[in-house]
Amino acid sequence: MRKGFIFSVILALVLVLPGLSQARVQGPCADCHTMHNSQNGAAVVSGGPYRALTKGDCVGCHTGGPNTGTNNIPYVNFTSAPTYGNFGIESGTNTLAGGNFYWVAQGSDAKGHNVSGIASQDGAIGLTPPGWNNTDFQKNGAVANGEATWSQQLTCAGTYGCHGDHQYTDDFKAISGAHHTDDSTIDGSTVGKSFRFLKGIKGIEDSDWEYQPTSTAHNQYYAVDRIGNFVDDPSAADPASINYLCAECHGNFHSGTGNTAGADDEGSTVGSPWIRHPSDFDMNNVSSKEYGQYPGPFDTAGTYWPGAPVGSTDLSGVKSTVLQAADDAIVLCISCHRAHGTPNDDLLRWDYTQCNASSGSSGNCGCYACHTTKY
Ligand code: HEC
Ligand code: HEC
Ligand code: HEC
Ligand code: HEC
Ligand code: HEC
Image (cartoon, rainbow, N blue to C red; front, top):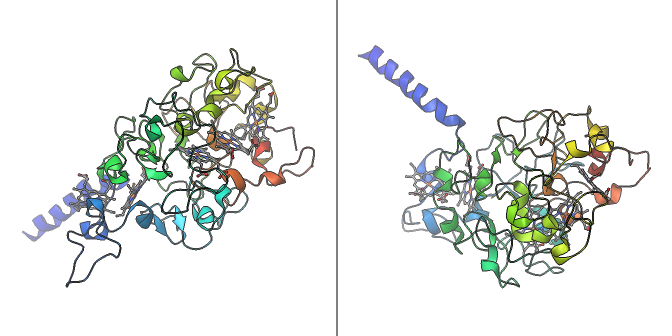
């Protein structure tokens, strides 16, 4: 009897343990939910009740102290100053892959996405995203209902947001069920099975959201090489690429990479000299130039460097080396930017004012990772 009991406990552990590797919420329902938002006649959480009976809204739950890397909730909005270093990856830093909303919440509009509930609308830019293209890049659903000029502020999820399903204005509706979805397979088919609940986007998710990432522990971003695939035609761009996510709101900065100006700056051919910085472009195409020495001063040539990440078409595993085979070193919008925010203007990964040609200093400008002969 007693042996049988111990055996069942062990069996239960064996059955439960594989679940720990799945990136879906765990723990007591009461940690996250309240059924009536009332206990002993008093409110359980102020400001509530919230939808899906949660103990907070998106911003509320994802706001917290500096992440220790062992917490099971990705805090993206710290209440005290994060430690960022030069690139947000060094030992001692405590931000995650998207950076942090702390700086934009403090009132520095250029240092983050001005998401409703975190910061008021961007004083310089207003509501409409720079580079907004309201007809292309709608394969994952039309953001802002395709309005020519945005009538509402950016939100975490939904019609005016990055995460979830763009057909729903309500951000909880847009993300419904995602937190409880087993996402051991990420194919973009549902919100829960998309990379970080970004509907339609693929990739491999780092288990601690890139807390102090290394060449072997990092997100693997999905991307495609525009050469041979879609050149500059947005209708042929792969909607599962992380660059497509940015293009859903900043389309002209993605398509406008040709070498002649025209409608949306689309050129009939692409290549150097470019008219906008390329993304979805494989550095294997130009590895005989300085790009073959990526990541330049930061590590041995051919090592993946999370300070200026590159994407791949192959998602069979996390790549610690790149420039080994076609389509494994693709330039991303987030090679230079972080999605939530950074201490730098234009939510850049590093301080652009430190980028000086022929300075002899290689320390703190990420452009040098690819432009390996320019410092
Ligand atoms: C009750 C608290 C709570 C609320 C409310 C909440 N989240 Fe989360 N969220 C979590 C926790 C806990 C996790 C970590 C789950 C895990 O292990 O992947 C998480 C994870 C995430 C992730 C990362 C998923 C991944 O693949 O790693 C995203 C994106 C996210 N939440 C977005 C949102 C958005 C958008 C909203 C609002 C619609 C929201 N969350 C509301 C608690 C919450
Ligand atoms: C759902 C729409 C949406 C998506 C998706 C989106 N953005 Fe934005 N972005 C905006 C809006 C709206 C603004 C202007 C208001 C603001 O600054 O937040 C903006 C502003 C910016 C700015 C300028 C910030 C400033 O204040 O100077 C940068 C840089 C940027 N986005 C980069 C990106 C990158 C990189 C991605 C992909 C990871 C991305 N955006 C995805 C809507 C979006
Ligand atoms: C760590 C936080 C967390 C825990 C623990 C948690 N939930 Fe949730 N749950 C959420 C969040 C956040 C949402 C709303 C966003 C979403 O649907 O992804 C949600 C949504 C739901 C929904 C509506 C969407 C759906 O999947 O149908 C149900 C039902 C639900 N939870 C039931 C439960 C029950 C029952 C438990 C305990 C056995 C539980 N939850 C434990 C965070 C949690
Ligand atoms: C992830 C790698 C990567 C990073 C980081 C990067 N670039 Fe580039 N850049 C490239 C590639 C690849 C090209 C295209 C080169 C070609 O076609 O010969 C390019 C093209 C350019 C061009 C146009 C060159 C031409 O031949 O027309 C300029 C200028 C430029 N980058 C500046 C910068 C600056 C400034 C930064 C930092 C803010 C930066 N780049 C960061 C990879 C990168
Ligand atoms: C090579 C690094 C690099 C890459 C790759 C890159 N950007 Fe930028 N981005 C910058 C810099 C630097 C600025 C500052 C303005 C400038 O130099 O034009 C900027 C500015 C922006 C702005 C703000 C414009 C404004 O009016 O304030 C947006 C939005 C933006 N980028 C989106 C994107 C998107 C979307 C992609 C991918 C399609 C992308 N960026 C790729 C470096 C980059």
